[in-house]
Length: 197
Image 1 (cartoon, helix red, strand yellow):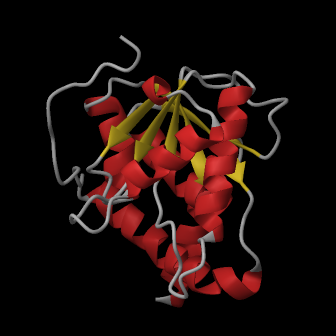
Image 2 (cartoon, rainbow, N blue to C red):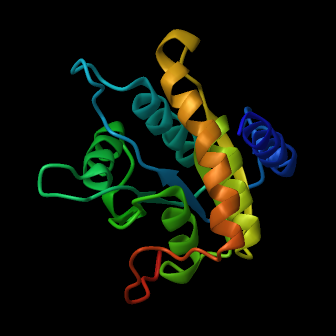
């Protein structure tokens, strides 16, 4: 199992190495940025650093003109948990116009978020916004589904606080390959949504 995990991890990183960006200067512009959801609060009740850094990255992309619209995709699995709406509220507080933010409430997994950005929201070219490790996996999914994607890396979280997430990511990369082989589809479909008219 260790060898399989290592191979999957290396393969995903190699597939995405040329499409992740830490700096805005060389990042190609896209009409839409796909902001991948996460919970606002950690288990201790403090604001999740992954959340805060992703919002900051989305704000930087929008204010620099690298994207015109932001599609927030995340988990809305219950009336008590709604990642897209929470992220939108905070983005609006930061100064991004509400009508430039679109929500995908069925982004339960990275696969769902990426594939639905094309199938539901009509995007064939996007900028993915998350931490690098997450962006790499999302980029592979995008390319395998005919989406021309680049990614802007939000700052990562320190090793001490991010170890559990990093370990979970290794297993998620094995699952990614299984999903690609089995042609896994998003959990929900829906009517098409036009971004920006």
